[in-house]
Image 1: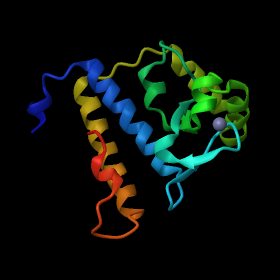
Image 2: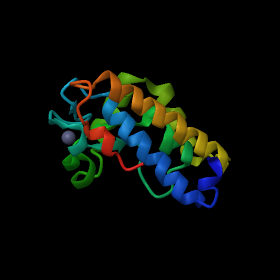
Image 3: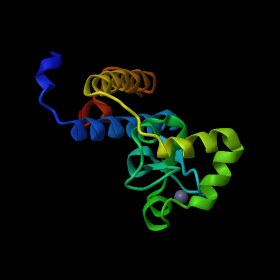
Length: 154
Ligand SMILES: [Zn+2]
């Protein structure tokens, strides 16, 4: 079964991994109605209308930053896309939530070249698919009915 995707490029795997973490993060912080709270403003909304906003941004974001759950939280599209992630508010949240040490660690990781193989990325994706399935089952509003997470793009 693994071999089915053996030809998939590393960057495609990296994108799939980032996208499943994004789904996981938004589901994880949603309430039973699927509502999440923006990490940087009072907005609330359905997790599918929100982004998973990264504390650290940029093209140079290392894979360890990209996949680190501590560095991403539900964020409304205005904060994430229009206000460039609302970095000041995000940092204030991070310091309160995790403390200076974790903030420093995440910033250090940005410069770190992480060696990760395609096989490790596939395992990572598989593990997160399972985590998403578990959350989806726990929050299933009515057993047996079709659920939006049945249509997730992976
Ligand atoms: Zn917001």
